[in-house]
Figure 1: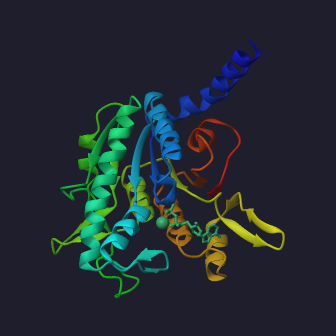
Figure 2 (figure 1 turned 30 degrees about the vertical axis):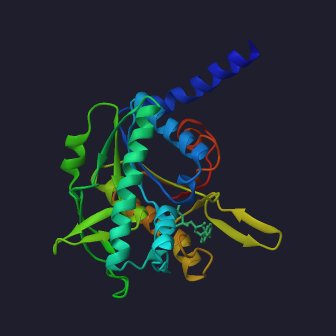
Figure 3 (figure 1 turned 60 degrees about the vertical axis):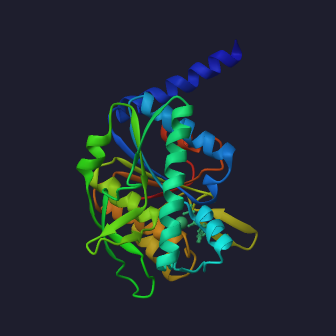
Length: 283
Ligand SMILES: Nc1ncnc2c1ncn2[C@@H]1O[C@H](COP(=O)(O)OP(=O)(O)O)[C@@H](O)[C@H]1O
Ligand SMILES: [Mg+2]
């Protein structure tokens, strides 16, 4: 009985959120090591299916870094990153293409197994993300940045309650495929689809600051503060594209951006439907 009452309390606490989020687009980026663990993955996808059934319109953007590394190791390819972006030769790009396609279809299949609807986008035909070569460095190879999101393709593909699952590969004007950091893609999609929220799921608690007695989580940061932390080296590597994704999304009209820990069971539901925030919110 006690337990049943507690459960109904939880549902009632969620009601205002469910009401205010009805029909709103949420973009969720999911990748990295958090994608490898089957239990974590199941929890994340269950949360997304749940969201889709309470009237939210989740869009899932994924990476696949560890799977790409695994495949590169098998064929003796080079694994190299600059400021969190993968240096991508033609050979690496072929691996990225193949692996992300597999990851995409597997995620969509898992969503269906959990009772949801999913539609794989941008896998064989790279028709969602128009790309130009990445501006920051000329030595990254086939690394692109988003030039345009074909949001009509996303919109048309989506039936009620079906979750678009989008791979972070883009098509260049030269017809080449380009590898794009999935954080960047999620941010651009959030802006193009007028999302209210961008959530980046990762395998750390959020943005951390090194302290003498261990690392501590920074619960909120504004854009100015993130610039200082990047300049000071506190935020580095793979966290840089995440922070940039959040600040760009905010500038583009997305209302809230969060970096949260996928390893916490049902972290998405906690973040979205309860009063206690988790991870780092960038404002
Ligand atoms: N200040 C910071 N707080 C937390 N993580 C950080 C920070 N600076 C750099 N990182 C690194 O960023 C990583 C997350 O980025 P990444 O490995 O690309 O994850 P994902 O695969 O989810 O994109 C963390 O595992 C950590 O090594
Ligand atoms: Mg990353």
